Image 1 (spheres, rainbow, N blue to C red):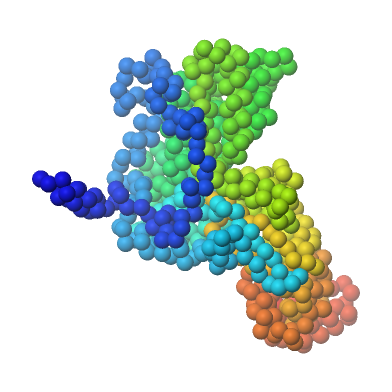
Image 2: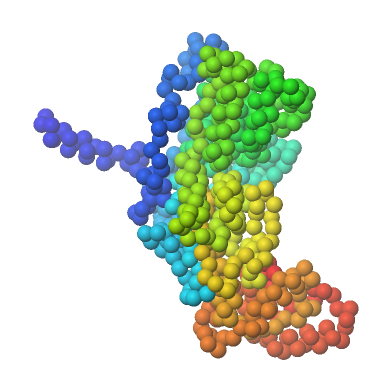
Length: 590
């Protein structure tokens, strides 16, 4: 056969292989991909080796498993794979009809898009300015931000599952991702979130799951115990676990074969860390460099290190039930929760490696220690992009930022770590989870790097142009970022006297806890006039109303206000939460 004909036939065959070669539309949009790997620094040979270790780099298999075929080994990996190979277990890029995936992908593109965000992405400098003069705001977008491929894939799979099984009772073992809007979307599709129960397996109530039901596993994964329980119930399982999380499981599988304890850099109460720990034979979860230092000190038996009893007491919730430091810290392998801060994970690995060298000698380090880079690339590039954004604003020839807005769930680990980067460099940053955090009185409710939620007043400069850096976590849709930017822009319009309140509400109609915020908003709206821009003012008031930030004016405003004021004057003992005028409802941000 002629070479040209062979090549043509080969290409035709490859094109006919549908599911094996198809890239999900949700992760490969027609527009420029979110994950621009060209922007990531080219890894060194050492970095490549850590991400893709050869057989020579991996720890040796212990005598317990060395003489057994892989399938014969009593390992967590084999237990997991026996479940995953069943027909009732749906996983991978296209487990359902291809038309369903195409339709869901299109719906996702429409629902999660953001116009201002798209404008910034298309701009050479990733900037967009809204408003004029002192009312102007320039938003500067980080080079990498928002939805990652793994999150898009998880949402598409969960959404497609509902389309594929419209009449089935459907459950999900946890939040799909740490984003309230996406989880509410699933609730609206009648996907039942399992109730928490500290006394049950995995801390959840599985007794509500019946045979033939469909159960979704979230992007963080599920524990092996949960997978086994669901398998015994005869359900259809839809696994949306991020492939980067699965890669960590592959790493701890190697630890088990070498009879090493998996030391996991993560948060022991986080769903992903719980799932990864369940795949380990023996594990210890450490949260930060401070705890890693305690472990290193114990390994080297330094003066003043934790005693066995102190160690066991401190880490009793973060270690295997059978774990004992005297026995299980002689051979360790490092793994991580994929959303942790990259630099801290690297520092933890280096510290523990040096401790093992000191305890056992450099010549035996491979026997006693193993560490491979399992930080998710999406996490890494978003952290690098925020670093670049912060450094550029603080350089001599850069344009300073008033603050960096970090948008994402307050319980989202990868989003929280994005805030740490500007914080370390002395740059103001505000982590908000929804647009409702940005209030009409120019205050913002935000989470700090220690996990505390504060309200900061006068956060946006209203008397001059503002310049704001923008980023978002890997589980945050562009549409949520868009709403936050619109809310900030609305503050400038309120301050400039563009928006007016068409109704005054008596103090007696407002709960005491809301009065301070209402008074601040009234100071702005009382001085405003709609005569110069009535259409813009009406649109602004409507926008606020739709988002529960400010209610629309009542059609019965004047009469209702007079009646309420008369009632308040006649009865000084009137309850603080007297009824508001008909048709008026305060939004929850007041």
